[in-house]
Length: 260
Image (cartoon, rainbow, N blue to C red):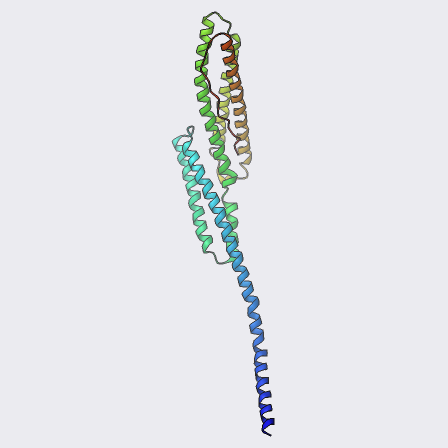
């Protein structure tokens, strides 16, 4: 009898335990999908923030480099430099503010919108970078032109000396005329390139893309002019040598890369 009572109690206890487990099981298993979803969302948020920080840093570094280029330009006025540096500093400040906001974002939808704004709201690589590169290349071309004009003055003096000595200098003079024309056109093209892009703003993209392309073509023409002017100088020096006139006037313009 005692044995039967023990078995009965054991059976009732087992039923109670099993029932409790049965009741508690849905709650336990329900927690696992929720925990997994939260972990997945946290991973997405972390990945988006890491990507955003990298993109913002890349843009700030590019803008800082542009500031150095602008301050080194000789063809821009102080007012133009101030306009550009103020605009770029404003972009840097805005990017830092955006980074702070993104780092604090906890809602994934808000975070996605903020991350997308880096590409859509900051046209640094689309406008600022090619714009400043165009002006920097144009500025370099203008510096080279000044140097080549100084050489032209020396070459003309040698040609005049040769002419005074009774030697034929018509070929030399023709080359000098062509050289002068090429340097003048190169100067015009470089100045026009600067004037064309100096007032562009990121807000105008993509409508101002064709303007940037037009300025790049101007620089291409200017570089071609410099190459021809250099060839003219080399031919003049050779003719002077054959005429027995020595000249140390020499300049090789630094090759200018295509503006991006």
